[in-house]
Image (cartoon, rainbow over all chains, first blue to last red; front, side, top):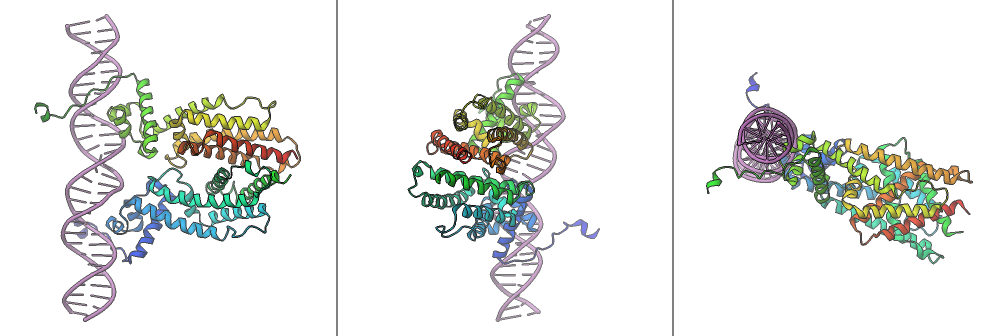
Length: 213
Length: 213
DNA sequence: GGCCTTTGCTACGGAGGTGTAGCTTCAGCA
DNA sequence: TGCTGAAGCTACACCTCCGTAGCAAAGGCC
């Protein structure tokens, strides 16, 4: 009764140095994305989940867009780090179909290893007021360019090689892999990595077959 | 000065019978999606754009979700109607690669013919609070099933036919076509229907080549 | 030309989010 | 042990959107 007359007085949150607070807030935002979708991310929601008040969030980020951009950047870097082990540096030696299959498998395993991260990256295709999308598109363009380069090298001056729209093919292949990632996130049982990888192998072999009659 | 003392008194919107008002409101929502994204669709925004007050909207729809669902249903039906002319009834006769190429071309032309409609359908991959997504997924599942059936018929009992994960392949092919549609909407000059269709033909031929050595 | 139904409007109360100004608490250090 | 700066908190004013209750205008019908 005595304390009811005054506001319950929120417990003081543990103090953290800026860098740690920052990480904690980004973690909170990632969790919100995974439980309630990107749309639910607001300065308010992040502060609440982190057990802190809004001014604390404003101390680290200018607004929720800024926070979201930073989150995608952080997760994007970590995602690329995951893929770095997977994407081969030199592909001159190995069988191209094997290589592609291994990349696909590595990607799907990476998705399964950190579903929350990849959900944040793969699901919001249109969302985010455009400044966020930029970072992602740049990263994807880079991946496409590398893939296209690899295909060009592979085809060399084989007959008919000129007929292939390599850049558009890169687009299609990347988006196919991504789509597999989304299926994996939505229904890991129905679309297990093995199944997705098997199709990747089939497609790679089919493509190569076309150029080795 | 005389009229400044009272509220400016909004001009009375032209009266419309419910059915027409409904259409008009759906049109307004579609325009909002195209100019500002799905996230910007609210009862308020729709009413404003339609030159009408909120209670009028509530007369036709229970809330913005309901409105969005109805819109997707309307546009979905119209989209399917566009595709009806394109998707062949019997495919026993023609060359499969030609058929697939024609379907792809028809689809891309349909997208270009009504970009606003297809933007509403293709762009919001994750958005929309889940009840809206349902309708779309059902339609896609149907398309996938039909495609898968066609491929099964085509393969028949050719050697190796059993090795193909037809259902997953249907997923990949549909999502590839859709991705082409998105490219077309974002950059019609860079990804003209001809270019996209050419790749579709190449992929179809490559696939068939694998089964006709 | 007056009535009555239909369509639209004003006006309210409320929920939730934004960003900021100014006060409080904590912890380390002299 | 008391000061001080960094880290948090409260409180406020503002905005946008939500739904609804009750009033006002149009226009068809007799």
